[in-house]
Length: 543
Ligand code: VG1
Ligand code: CO
Image (tube, rainbow, N blue to C red):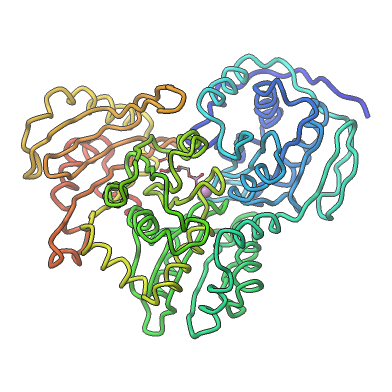
């Protein structure tokens, strides 16, 4: 088996975004495109020789072909062993768990997360480091720099290998181990949560529906909820991963998981509903006729964490991404533990988790997690909610409404304007930045602007600085308006506008967020001039 050194030409567009490189499948299908990026990853890991790499993806279109190429390239680039999930499958949190459990040097995850899949849709690839978390910016910058200078890549000259049966075999000088994608992860969940208590919950008449959206969490959810916890067969719907996710958009929110939401708001609704995204790291939590915003979910889980065996001793601290509501901060203050505000993207939580500064972290984009792995973890969040329900005997709605009474309600909504022209996106951010110096002190939307800035973050562990992470208007009454550009899209630009307002009065805590936040919503539209610049009268997605 010869190692081939294939000459190639650099592509100018291989800059990793919020979560790896995401592009249209047709872009990835260009000759050498995937290979160039994989070689650039490997070059950024000079100490990879003889080490173990974990490999798998969410099963989307191109997953299997990419796995074969990456195995051959890993063998030609000095890796000692690759642990690949059977069928080329692994959820994002499972890769993180497997890297940690087996002390692997890193992992490659093939996914474009919640973006749709299929020949006309999206594919993605990202690298996770030895702590199990996404590569930090220093490394993604090195990968990008490498991709701009690449001249050749190394690949083993060999036929496709069998990734559908568990077992080990040599590939050149490297070992390939095909492993069960679910077992390590399921074992980790059993160590964190009280599975006996959850079995008792399901043995009662508690009913749940979990929508795997034909993406990666199906096999994990079936094993954990139905096989191990005894939930009725059929609790998991859309549980078979399909290469095109059944034509759906596996983004767990009220828009894209509408049929689940409809079921939870119906007359005969189950007690609990949840969904996950393409790669299994996001979660949406629903109670009977009740939707839990992700920001609230983080706060509620933190306030009730001691119900879960792994967190019985309490939390060290909590972190949230900047646009995520301040609900978790209030809980941290009450608990007397530190809280941190990071830029968007899970990679910024890694250092805080490794340094033992935080135990829980979360994002408004349906991401919640803890120090058990270094990724957000959809099924972990579902199990955490089930644990709190089991321990308290209360419904989801009860738990959240009482939380608001106790801590105040942070009304919250995010408005996305997807796929606008890239130039309009840039113009919006440029003109907002230019206005920053004159905004402080002004009264807007009936509130005084206390501070207006472009969010920058200094990592408290390694001192690295990340700037231009979103425009913030902070009001004297605690309300916030935030505008940033998405770093995960594959077409044009996506503007996200985040609105938040704190309501302490229990009598006014059960209103429609779109109404309560109307003034801020109007202000966001006016300041960005979104309609004028794009012709869009309304957002494409409201969460
Ligand atoms: C979005 C979310 C962000 C999340 C990221 C990756 O990024 O806003 O909170 O970490 O997706 O999630 P952006 O840059 O488009 O706003 V996933 O589940 O797509 O890996
Ligand atoms: Co995801």
